[in-house]
Image 1 (cartoon, one colour):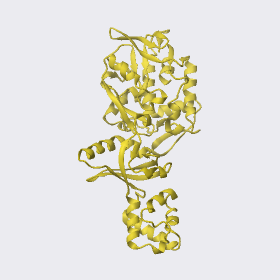
Image 2 (cartoon, helix red, strand yellow):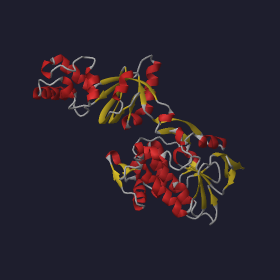
Image 3 (cartoon, rainbow, N blue to C red):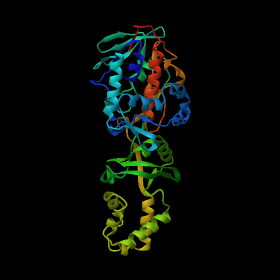
Image 4 (tube, rainbow, N blue to C red):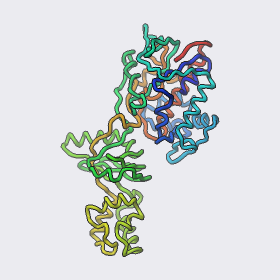
Length: 407
């Protein structure tokens, strides 16, 4: 939508959408709230979040940065708010607010939108793209912008078609795999905790010795763990799991629910809590710290749930303190691409001119968004790639002869 509207400032543009309506995937982002960018104002710091590949984004970011994205949406009637980690959301907390801005932008620039229009391939001749094949027949164009996305959430239409077409056209494509994806654990009782969320938990992974530790927001699901902490760690945890399997071991996980306290401080705080309410049952005392469902699971193996705090032995109390700092789970697997927020992989960045987003392999073709081989964390970084590359692609076509057809 962004690429089409920008390209239409000087061209006749048709947007082809295989779904019945636009923005199906967009409406699901950020749990329906749409974390539409990361409000990091410095382009170099923003690019660093994409690792080594971030250097490729510096050129398009000079034309449409995260600050530009904030201004773009705000100036078109969508106030926003910035939450922790610079995550920007519509003030309405509705992804539809973002979609509405994009639809208005396309209406302003005269984009012709065709829904129920599935593209089945590119029309290529002598190294040039002449248009696209659709279920309804061929559609010729002087230039084609591909914005078909990756393979995450395939039910929204992101089925990886663009990767196949680009390989056939001569591009190098790293096969996509789930990147930002929840994980499943071996413990079946985890479903008892589904829906519980925590703003700050430390996640540690173990085999032989601790090999990973990060702190962030975490969500319990019916089969395991999700949330930014897990999504951002998914690829590394999967690699550690493979290492553990090679050594015929399991990958153990530990959750620290009080990462700002060391073990001694947790024990001291527990002593103080019991001293204030010595006759209250332990499950009641701990429920002032943690959700009751989690407390019940923490205490169930020890059968201490209904024991008054004053009857808790020093040994049992210290054991409980250690459990609060290291709740054990067992990594089983990452969930499949249907549950991934983002897929990694895509077209080699060396095969795209990032000044214009035009293919260096095929004339008359531009590539934007999730088609490109960028790994990124959660926090608005995926959609910023979309805005940045799409704006640059559309901008590069503004100098085209009036009346030129683009799709």
